[in-house]
Image (cartoon, rainbow, N blue to C red):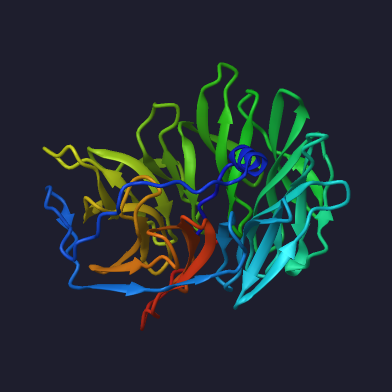
Amino acid sequence: MIKRRTLTVVAAVCAAGLSAASGSSASAVSASSGVSSGSDSASASDSTSVPGTDLNAGANSWTTAVGDNGDVTGAHSVSGQIHGFVWHGGTLVDLPPGANQDYSIANAVNAGGDVVGTGGSYGFGYVHAYEWKGGSPNGTDFGALYGNSFANAVNTAGEIAGQSQTSLSVTVGALLNSGVPTVLPDLGGSYTAPMYLNDAGTAAGYSLTPSGDQHAVVWIGGKLTDLGIGTAAGLNAQGQVLVASAQGKGTPFLWTNGVETTFGTGVQTVTGLNNAGQVVGTFLPAGSTTAHGFVWQNGQLTDLGAAFFPTAVNNVGQVLGNTAADSYGLGVVWYQGQVTTLAPTSGQYSEPEQLNDNGLVAGIVQGTQDATVWQLPAVSGAALQKRGG
């Protein structure tokens, strides 16, 4: 499961350099943090902790994706430059910028270990879509395509979802096969972004209207479906699209073949979707002023408590989150009532962002800003749903 940082934010971070910040001490997750609010309440029977493993990517490093084969992608600082990387089983491979480029960022990885991302130049100000086949350090620069280009996601077949500029003010969505782009239809505005891609070739993201409104969209067989105000926050193997609010407008919902399902009153954010149709996010229980985490499936909402802010859910049903809404908390995983804390390798705080189906979690620790992984204990007898891109 992937939680992505937008390329514009990442580029700004690269240019400015990542800096560690201090904050208040993290609040611990109670083993009985569920609070009844008219929904089912999660009751953790006990609490455990797992240690982190530093990827040795150096200070000012971060992760962007974790594949089910154990590949972890991200970026790190190397001699004053930002380089992409892929890590697997204790070995980190640097993915350096190409000729005449100042930085590279690895954004996503598929089951075969193919990594996609971007490379660019500060001086010339251009950004190109990149692929590192099989995680090889010798990447393929797809060039400008129609202008600056970006690679956001890759499926098992090697199809890439990305973007390209047709002018300085217009960015379109595109699918790339063997480096050949096909422009996706849009809503007529200045910016379109396919951010998710499954193995069936279905893509989801958002597109601006001519008036500047942001709408969630899905492309099935290259055809556009407008899902209304919002942005795609997840796409599973079955083609279900999780839609989050955008620009302060809209109500979160799950789109399934034209049917929209909402999650009940009080739901504020949605942050993850798996192949079983489980959704995670935050909601405001009746009579409360504090947001709680939740996991929802088939109309049933389970309250994860006030100190749980979910960020992802895998196909086993493990829910990844943090004990604080900002960066200054501890990473936690909820599964069938048990809460596992992800201990930082150094400093006070852990900030996990990605989780795969084998319980490998990737993120950073605050203070040293080091890319880190945590391996959850195996879930015995877990029946995985069909995995998607």
